[in-house]
Structure formats: structure tokens, C-alpha cells
Length: 350
Image: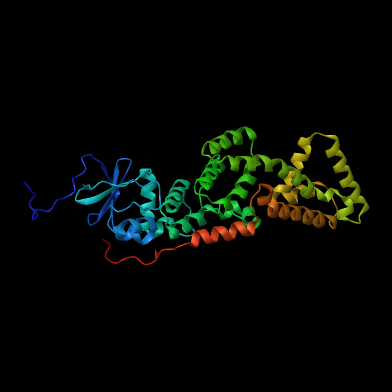
């Protein structure tokens, strides 16, 4: 017997029970997103406004997502949850919560305001996955205050950073940069890692290799020795009196003595000298400790800072990456690609 055409068939209701999100649940929402058993009732218009992936999904109906631009979205069955189409996502519920909040509350990633790594990494990861350029750009701008691409910003990192610090943070940032494919962050991260104990760094590199990114690991391992050699060459160049040409017999004698002591003692002595010259705030104190005359002090300081600048400029190449200008240009293009009209929201979300 044929079915009565006057009776409209409705999608079956999902049998599985979920926990409704307590802060991302809009009664007038038009779709329910589900992650790790948590349901978020939101508006398709808001999702489509920020995310290209969601916009493509909804263009021909929520269930027409065969061509979605991400592997992390399961094709949903004809199902509903509490009267709305339901879409299961392969994301952490906490990450999705941060991502959705950044859409609904412009102040959630407020420019110039400090935030947590958990929040900004979740938003960067999902905005990258679901192609939400405006949110991706805002998240990246916060991340880059911790691992910038200029030496001036690196020197002021403790003052300028907008993401709260935490123990062994370089490991988390390395993983994030690899997973979201943001190479412009890597030189500064590698530079930071080079100042850490190998006992801490090597296990972290094993985790990165486990993600299928052995190339990143080999770039670091091959570059670290080159970096250390260049630091000795550039930062301690003030000991080369022919190059420095102080023209002061007393100070040249003192620097010769410093060089002789460094040569006679262990490599740890030279490493300690390099460390003092690497950090901008330590350079002045170190040069003062050399007991040079007032005329020679600024000359030596200038030589050390020129060495720091040279190392920073060569940093990407040391780790077999494109030069800074190329990395910055690629990142700018990536961040601004296909930017949605995220600044103007619909007055009546659907």
C-alpha cells in the first residue's frame, strides 16, 4: 500500500541523549551542533557568516555536505534534535565552545586584551579547520605576540605578549604551529627551544614526529648546531679586535684577556658568554662587567646588538625555511584569504 502523500515524512529524532550547553544554547537557534556529547543550539546564519565550510554546507541544505572543505565533519543522517537539524562534529566540546563564543561575542577575543592559550588555540585550530578567516586572523594576532617575527617584538615579549605564560609553553605552541600549518611562528619557537634543556626538548620532538611531521624535527635538529656556531661567531665578534678596531690599547688588552680565558676554559664558558649577549636586557650589564672605558663600551654594545640582529635575520634559513619576508607575506595572504563579512551580523539570525 502506497504512503499517503499528504502526510509529510519527518526526519527521525536522534535517540542518543546529549547534554545541552549551558551558555551556547539559543532557543531560537536553527541548528544543533554536537561534539563529545554536548549540544550547542546556534544559528545557521551566524555560522555561515563566519565560516566558509558551514556556508557551503548550508547553501543547499544542512545535510548536503558531501563537498565540505574539511575531513573533520561527518555527513549527518536525516536526524534532528529538539526540533532542529543536528550535525555531529569531530571536535572537542571545549574547543567548539570557544569557537562559537568568538562568533557571538566580539569581545571574546578582544584586541589588546590578555587571554588564555586554551581559548586562543581552540579558536585558531577550528577557524583554520572551518575556514573562518576573520577569527583566524584575530587568534593569530594574539599568538604572534608570544612568538613574533621581528627581533624588536621578541625583545619586548614579556611586555607585549597577550597570551598568559605557562610552563613549557613552547611545546604547546610548536604543536599548534605544526597542526595549523603556520610556519612563520616556527623560527621564534625554535630559537626559544634552543635555549632549553635538550632533556625537555627531545621528547617534545618525538611527539611532533608522531604527528607525521618528521621534516620539522629534522629541520630543528640540523639547524640547532648551526645556530650555536653562528651565535659564537656573531655575538662574540667584539673579541676580534681587527674587526672592532677600538683604537684603545687598554680596552683591547682587556678583551684579549677575556678571549684567552674563554679559550683556556671549557665550552661552557663560551656558552655562558653567548647567553649573556643573546638577551637584550643582559647586554649592557655584561659589557659593563668587562670594565672597558666609556668610549669603548658603546662600541662593544653596538657590535653585540648587530650580531643579535644578524642572527635573527638568518634564523629562518638556519632551520631551512624561507626568509622572514617570504614567511610574513605567505602568512598575510593566508590570513586574508576569502575573508567573510564577519564585521556585519544579521539583525535577525536564523
